[in-house]
Image (cartoon, rainbow, N blue to C red):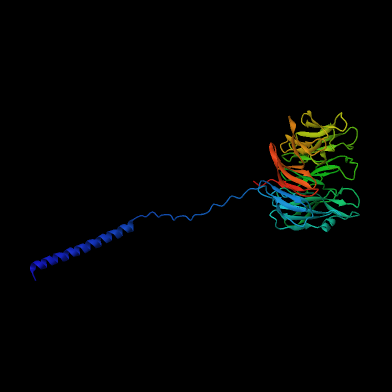
Length: 434
């Protein structure tokens, strides 16, 4: 072997070994660098999610009877039928808009059946049958017992009602009792016996009831407790007919007292008048606010004469023209009176703001919108006006057999909501929950 060649070969081996050592060293340095390196993790890409569509809030809750069946509207679309089979004469709505009470009356024998249904059309059920009402009190010569005044307790699905007797002939005799009916469970609770209950009016805070009878007005707890501590007694008003007169009290906004007008005992005498009373809810004796001359009997047939803020009183007084009367507004604090309008006045009621009020003239359905300090303006041709809030109201327009339920407001045109059939149309409305 050539010594030069061996030398060259050894040099090549050394060079290859050196390269291998260098490669191993470089690999070990990379591993060490990886072992000590700090990594910032990359967050995973989120999975796209769909945004849920917001739930439409009802404009209002409306239940009405149309041809003997119950219908519901939320103001967002066409009304939908809740029941079939007919027979429904009156409807009542819980203030959450979720439950309707249905009163079915048999016109032949004047009996009633009370049902309930959810406003989505589900869970229709019978709460009290005609025979259940007849067992509430001994009949003692009466033919039947049926509900008189009926309403949901605010914020609940509990119904309060009192009852009346059905005679063979004409007449309207109330038992002046009080019952509570849980429409969810069906539990019936007698709250007050005959003579201790009456027509009832809820206080704004829901803690008390005003109970009205033909000769007294009292304040009790919402559950009927404490029925005798606070009351105003008065002489029954002569109606010259087969029914008794029940005044319409108004609660103060803070639920601290009632204000009510009691007409003179003979409302058809040549000189008539009335007394305005305060009935404190806290236990103090009633106090006389004012004595006034005028007609407080006929205008108060269906609506309160005292404004919701208790400041104003509306009534009528005969004018010099035969058959004509004046609409009088008086401020109860200082006694200032205003003859606001004249004609054949029919009082409809105060608006919730205590500044506006509604009435009709000449015995027709042409409703007038009055405002304190301003002349009246035509409002609508209709009847049965119900305020939904301070600016919006519903009413019936048309005539028996051809009605429309209209939605109107202060300063805006009315629009039709439904066209129910029948001579008598019952509807109830509630504002949506916030």
